[in-house]
Length: 117
Image (cartoon, rainbow, N blue to C red; front, side):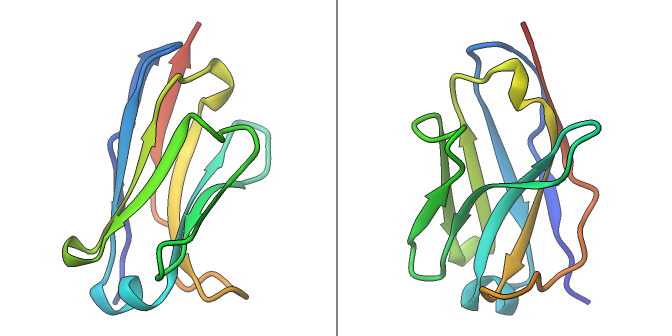
């Protein structure tokens, strides 16, 4: 069964940086888009960044210029480099694969990111 494992979250001061990692099954990873999502307390899950199998990226307006998504197909891992973090970035961050129409995997536990002011 394919599983996702997110890691790299933590507590950081505003202006700081974190790098999140997500490891997934090889076959799912290499042929599909991968995305990072986040869910803040009391809010719906939202897309943060997405990278296609061809390397095309897109970002939520709120993180453009601060976050960078990348993927390493050899390691079956997708990363999210988060710089200039703000308190409003505080959330549980998740990753998932999609085929452009639906999510392909069950949501994992996520990794908590907390940014203090």
